[in-house]
Length: 199
Image (cartoon, rainbow, N blue to C red; front, side, top):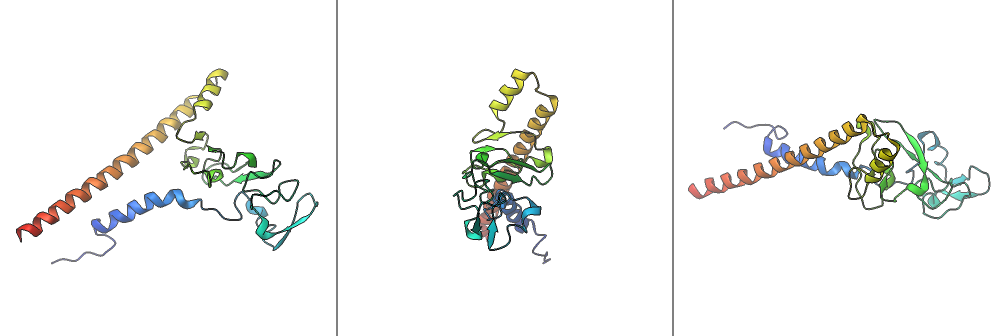
């Protein structure tokens, strides 16, 4: 009987692929440095951090604690606690940008990587590789408000429609692959149970 390596056997590879499929959305787990520009990470690295407007200092454990200690929002870049705060979207694969921190966890995906909705209970699809120029809402993959706004202005472009179609194709392909994997596993188990009966 021929043996195959563990990593190349199809029965072992399928659960691995499925686990990767479900683990990708959990990449944006909450960390204290969420919403901070990479150049500012050293600034926030010390145990006592000074507000950028020099109004006061705060300890590192008060960073992103959902209470505004600094008037300029220095201590809350990853929450919506401070009205003047800014959240940094890394947007790997697209253009990084700052958004107002009031847009964090508001159930509207403002960052194309979905990092601004880490605690809102929705899962934002990562559209950075598609250019990141689509807006998303909870329960809706394409924002109807964005479409209405662009239709009113007469600015709906072929690029937005093409990106939306591309996202739709990606979602359909993922569902089909997942369905094929489930069907394969069901038939594989039936074949094994039949073999056991006839032995």
